[in-house]
Amino acid sequence: MQPTRPPSVSRVLETDAARELVAEHGHASAAEAIRAIIATCRAAGEAASPEAIGMQAATLLAGEARSPLRPVWNCTGTILHTNLGRATLSDSAVAAAAAAMRRPIALEYDLAAGGRGSRDDAVADLLRILTGAEASLLVNNNAAAVMLVLATFARGREVIVSRGELIEIGGAFRLPDIMAAAGATLREVGTTNRTHLRDYEAALCEQTALIMKVHSSNFRIEGFTSEVSAAELAPLARRAGVPLVNDLGSGTLLDMAPLGLPREPTVAEAVAEGADIVTFSGDKLLGGPQAGFAIGGADLVARMAGHPMKRAMRLDKIRLAALEATLRDYRRGRDNPTWAAMRRDIGDIAAAAARLAPRLREVLGPGFLVEAVASTCQIGSGAAPTATLPSTALAVTPPEGVSAECLASACRALDEPVIGRLREGRLLLDLRCLASRDEDGFIGAFAGLAFAGS
Image 1 (cartoon, rainbow, N blue to C red):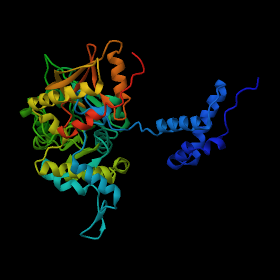
Image 2: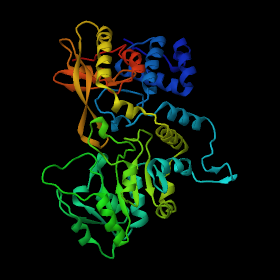
Image 3: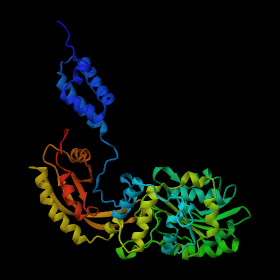
Image 4: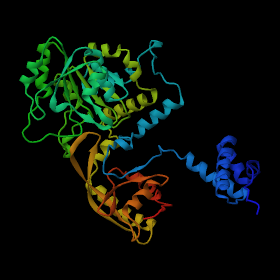
């Protein structure tokens, strides 16, 4: 018996389905996909019509064209979720970034003088107003800001840091490793839970380049503890003639206490307390694009700006445009999405849950139970790690034969993935981060939900 032979690539390319593939993906990609399907058929000894192979090739290319960076619905109960890109940008920041992508901009061009300028000047005045710092410098994230500070002022010398502040954050970022990479020597003082001013004083020597205060970021030490504030360290640093660096980590321009969250020093307060250099992030509590700030005395900032490493860490025009718009929102008293989510009233979230529960139940179909339940939401990205905000979630219980894990996996496979958290056999979809204007889109995302198995 003659073995079954699939059609040739050229024969499949003559079909209407293949012509559409060529128009959408190009001849080379279409032919390659068709060739792959034919090889699969040949290996399995299966017959397939040219039209069927063209359709299978279309499915293959559609899957390959699906970006892994597609937008998702953040229903995790974490506002600043590192794995989901941290802060979402305001409409004004998005518009500014889009404008910078479409047209040339005066990035390093002084429009008044008609010559070369500095890209950091775009936000210098705004940061001076919002923080009280004399000067500022921008890099691609806060880790880069810390690295640049150490490389500029402490290469071959010592930096005094409390043992209780030798942090490790996501991605195995360890402060001691950053010190070593920058060529600085770490001088640990105090103990894990208690450090006193006298510990810093005893460590001062001719090799001391900096005294550094580091935010604990994603952990808290409680109980029998003692730490020295930046306000207490500032006079000591001045007497010793060395700069005090205050690494705020996330960093906030606004007071979080009115939200019922633990009080964090604002960037302006850190400057006023006497730190010579303050570093912080752009895509966390600031609510902007990924960026790192080093602000402080003009002479010190100028030295960092002149370091060769600065060029390797600088911001591109797109993020800089989004960052300037974010800071202008602060200047105008407008909330960005991060602060809108943190300020959102629990009654408003509960009302959204009441509206959405029956709609989601209808979309999911028979057998699914959808109910509004009390939830808690965390800030995320190292901000207020032990504090939570009250929230409301949609708790989805799947029908018999479908596990909650299977439901969560199916939600992640949607064209616009919905990311929640599993709890006691249910999928919880926290609604604090879902703006009212996005409710229709959120419900629409569940269309076509399919299960591979339970």
